[in-house]
Image (cartoon, rainbow, N blue to C red; front, side):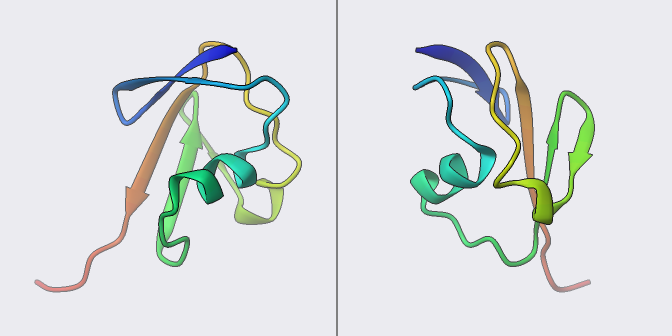
Length: 67
């Protein structure tokens, strides 16, 4: 198990999991979101190849409509 933070909340996950797999496990809508790991935005096309590491700090931002 490795420890990561997602939007300031601690999570413990299995090793060797990709960002894509983690997002799928969260069961969140992937349209209109951006993800940064350790203050670096990860392109959606790279989610399936980006392995999560111990102590990664993940920020998931959802776009909203309105004004």
